[in-house]
Amino acid sequence: MHYNWVLVLHLFAAIAFVGTVFVEVVLIEGLHKQLSKPQMTMLESALANRSVRVMPWVIGLLFGTGLTLAWSYRDALAQPLASSFSILLVCKITLALSVLTHIATAMWWRLHGRLNGQRSRRLHYNVFAHVVVIVFLAKAMFFVSW
Image 1: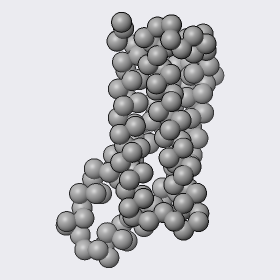
Image 2: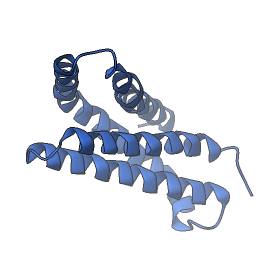
Image 3: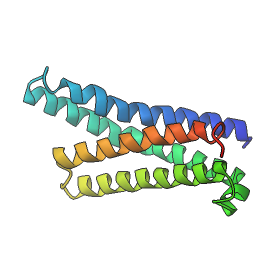
Image 4: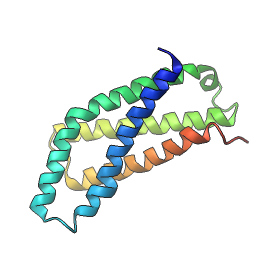
């Protein structure tokens, strides 16, 4: 598939993923003071159930297109310390793999009934911090150099 089309698909998947994490961390988290505990439990449960059905497709598209895009930069990745672009790309990929590890951990905990509110919140905050840095690095790769 042509690079630009893969890039567009990657961007749409990134928007969906980062947007979902933003909603969960920033918007939903702020509702704890406004909604009762049963209402929050119902909201979080409904969101989690919907996310479990939709997000695997988004994550699959995000990482699939990401791998395709990384292949385009295989020369830069072959020498990861050769340029600022390569260093930032390696950092971005490392953080993306960390996000994938967080997601796999959350899925494992959920499957085994160990994903409680505290763990979920901590995972969401970590993933949110990761994706903010990833978005910055995605742009910085093309305008930061040293």
